[in-house]
Amino acid sequence: MRRIALRWRGRGFTLIELLVVIAIIAVLIGLLLPAVQKVREAAARMQSSNNLKQMGLGLHNAAGVFNGPLPPAYGFYPPGGTRDWGNGDCEGSLFVHLLPYIEQDNMWKASFTQNNGHLGYQLEWAGKPRVVKTYIAPADQTYVDGQPYTSYRVNGMLFCSPPGGSANAQTSNGWSNGPSLPRTFADGQSNTVMIAESFGRPGNENSTTTGTGIVEAKWFASFDHVDCPNGGRCNGPVYFVAGDPILRINYTTPPFYSGVPQNMTRADFFKPQVISAGIVQTVLGDGSVRGVKATISPETWYRANHPSDGLVLANDW
Image (tube, rainbow, N blue to C red; front, side, top):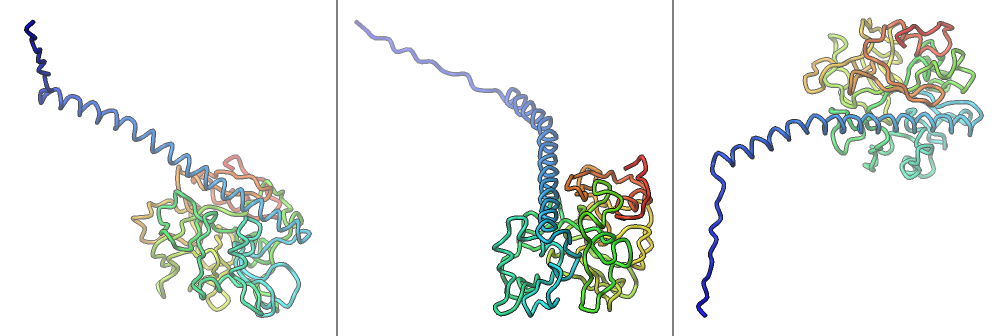
């Protein structure tokens, strides 16, 4: 029997059909990208919120260990001792003192010099790893991979001595003392900001005509700045608010810097800064995290930062 081979010749896409398919895919991608971007932004805000939560809990744990005292913005902690890192004490920023309480024991131990004490700068001098993810907000567009920057600042009105007063006042033994929990929080822990978001690399900041200021925020460092007292040294990384008598900077509205990082020409280092969604995330004295709108008035922001002014927060809080 004779076999007949059947051969099917498939019909290919025409150019018009191919262009239609490509156009449909492009439209779908265009519809999908904003949704993906929103999910990423939400995830970044959630991670930053979690970072702040960890820091808030770490501060409470530190206060619990030492029966109240909190770390200073920059100085010695815990209280007592010789207040000399060369004799076994710890000198550094608040973020240095927080390391053992945010599961960064290895980083903490690395800041120890044999026969001496703990010092935040020791990590840099020794060339040791010093990137702490908890101190980096994922949405911080200014962050440079591998750099020990921080996307957060501490409240200068709270963590500099005396609370609500002269932030850079020094004791006879060196840097200022910190506040105490709950004693310092006369206005209530849930009404006082402890830490707020800010860019890790805020740009070329020139607060005066006499010199260039800080262009990056290292979590372990104090800062040299022309506007600082104490011979040009500031307790840092910190931020200040309108009405705070410490720095000779005339703050105006709004209280936050909200420019696009890539276009910064003068990002005020000593302000909290809007990183995403028109809000600045903060951690309060009770350990809760709160998003503060960039439209908040300077007066309300001042009241939320002063721990003991006795003033009631306004409706825009």
